[in-house]
Length: 467
Image 1 (tube, helix red, strand yellow):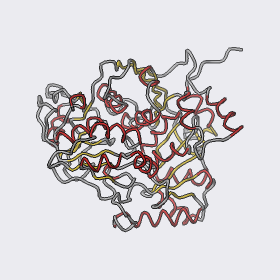
Image 2 (cartoon, rainbow, N blue to C red; image 1 turned 180 degrees about the vertical axis):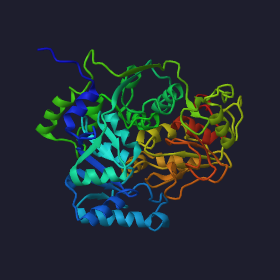
Image 3 (cartoon, rainbow, N blue to C red; image 1 turned 90 degrees about the vertical axis):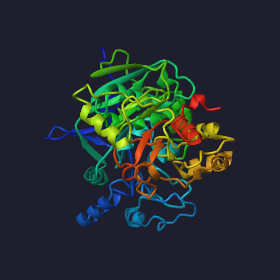
């Protein structure tokens, strides 16, 4: 009997399929999920009104990350606007017996950073978070799914999620990356080529030579931006790098269970000849560091390029003109040398230990340019602890960076870390729409390499040209 070749997505979905609803959506079992304090309190409130409990509290985890202050010595009152969310999160988690990573917890941090580093998310697993960047954990070969508040209630009560089955897409990234070019640049290049919604209705598998060469933390960065491509889930097939990364982590299988898990995980790849609904290929051999010039991630160019003139294209003219006006730029203007006011290194996209090491290598022995405010905020308390053990915090502080406590920080500014109107920021975060990092703030997204180099130069800079 011949077995039909299947994609990795088919294997993940079919393994978690529970039933098909009358409305055509599939009920999918959720292995583990992580809550955060912006959305979970509302779900807890609804459960209380309905007098319902959490079906699998042992598979549910709570994180304080979006509204927590990053200032040293912080408490829940340091950011007054976030205090009610943190209190409600603490009370709801206690009521339902959910493990809470609270302020002061040695493992607290951004949910999409903490889950991989603790082994909360595993290859072949479904992993839901009430945050669109749940797709980040696809870097471990998992199916990460961002969910809304009503969907979160459903998961808490039933441990399942109702979804229309996505179609499958594979993006093959060819070639070897040059120095100072990273996973963030891969994601930005994909968005520049295909737009901000080409992945809508698809689950995206990232494959190819460039992807296989990435570290696990870099794969997490790549998958983080799948949602910006329009997809709820992006993932990479697990390999020996994945297994080495996960081995010994607190929530990963141990002993005989580890060996049994490995046997299953090694089957998690798309079969030879498996049919995808859509295939795309990108040659990355000559890829340069990337940076956004506009107000969505598809408005991206190489850092050495000039702002494109899209006035002749009726489909993009209005959008580009608005973006240029908001960003205070003109078509044909060079990105290199553009004066900046602030640099932010952090978020679930680029705040892991490898990101901080890369930035520290660039800024070591140098100083942040006069007039530039520079911030480095680790993605978790574990990352912060590891960075300080290596002396990275000293490098950042000596260079003139603010060194913060872990949390989402300037990514969306929910903790009070925001820029001022018309400030120009180079940021390693994942969204650059109008007002994202503060009213009137002009955000240029890049990898840590461009961000670190720009902090030293005081202008948008090419890290390849920094002495």
